[in-house]
Image (tube, rainbow, N blue to C red; front, side, top):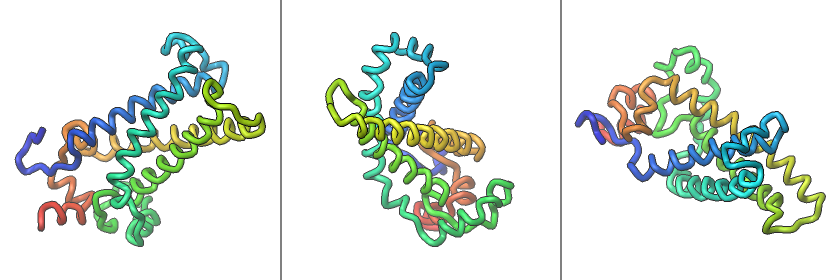
Length: 206
C-alpha cells in the first residue's frame, strides 16, 4: 500500500511475504536450535509441544526457510554483487555508524553492508542445510564421524546466522524509515536519495 503517491516502491507484496515467512521460520529455528544446543535452553522445547515435536519440526521448518530464501536469492543475487564502490563503502562504514553518512559513496538498491549480510546468510543457509541433512537421522544414515563434523558445522553456522540476523534487525530499526519498506513496501524519496542515491536515480530518472 502506497501511503503517499510520491513514495517509491521498494518491495512487492510477494517479496515482503517471502521475507516475513523466512523471518518467522528463523525465530522458530533459533528457539528450537538453542534448546538442542544447551540443557539450559531445553524448556524452549515446550513451545513446540515438547522435545520430540521440537526435533521433528526443526528440520522441516529449516527446509521451508531454505526454500523461502532460495526464491529471494534467485531474484536478488545480481543486485547483491559486490563492486569496488561497495568495498569503499565498507572501508568507511565507521562514518555511517557515527551518523556522518552524507558523504558516503553512492549506493544502488543495497549498500555494501547489506550485500555482505546477503552472502553471509546464503553461505550459512547452504551449510546449515547440508549439515542438517547429516544430522537428520530419522531419514538419513551417515558415518558417525561425518555426523559429528556436521554437528560442529551446524552449530557454528547457526551462531553466525543468529548474530547476522540480530545485526540486520538492529540496522533496520536504527536507520529511520527503513522498517516501512518491509511493512508497507515503500520508502520516501528523501530516504532513498540519502541512503541509496544510485537506486533513487534509477527509479525516478532524476
